[in-house]
Amino acid sequence: MRSVLGIDAAWTEHEPSGIALIADNGSGWRLIDVAASYEAFMRPVPDAGPILRHRGSVPDAAAIIEAANATAGTPVDIVAVDMPLAMTPIVGRRVSDNLISAAYGSRHASTHTPSVTRPGKLSDDLRTELEDAGYRLAVSNPVGRALLEIYPHPALIELAAAERRLPYKASKISKYWPKAPPGARKANLLEAWRQIVSLLETQIIGVVAALPLPPVTARGYEMKAFEDSLDAVVCAWVGACVLDGRARAFGDEVSAIWVPNGISSGIK
Image 1 (cartoon, rainbow, N blue to C red):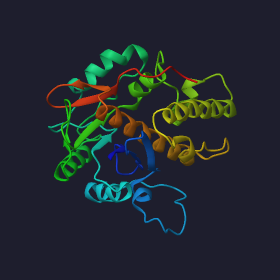
Image 2: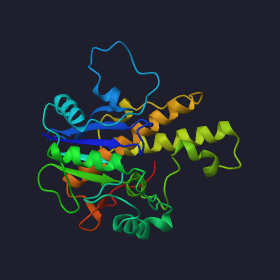
Image 3: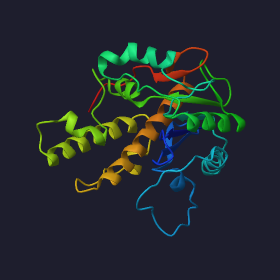
Image 4: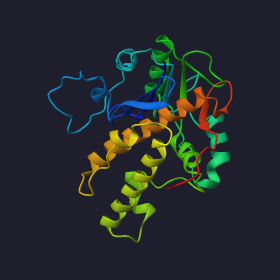
């Protein structure tokens, strides 16, 4: 059996990070678990109740891998992370950032510029700890267990066969639909999420069941928790594409961002 751990890693320790685990026993990829924070993912099953508001924390890579292995029942093959990662300390834009921006900038999916402070040490420490756990950063076709850098925007463009980045970030709804009233903006966002979840279901069984849409009355932190979980599933899916030989790396010998090959019939 193969398994992939997807992490939508926050660039600071104050914000929560989504995490998703998928596995394939030979009959296709299935979503095993998804959570909106490291704490929620590593909680024991017989728990008192759900976490009402997810909090940020410094990731304990060894503990996260141990929890993922136990849940999957097999060692994780790929850890796919939405965070700038590199073999050397990150101080600014990398070749991988520039290549993605050149390929997807016209589709409004250029990368954010990392710096020595964001994600800075958080990125360096996560990469080092995952390497210690057996997951070395892969900048070309990985052999054995590997760590991958993912950027969801181009991945979703390929999944949806979209002309430009999908409008699915909760913090940007006033920019996406400036003339719409607040209620309509949120409804539009929920529809974008519904479409993405539907597309992911065609690649990973169980996404629809695991990610019910929040109500239109949901608070901001509840919307963000859903978005973080969704991004984590996207990361896991890209990791699966790499294992299946359906993705390419944009980068050099220091860093690389992995993007799936175009494989979808488009938004439904």
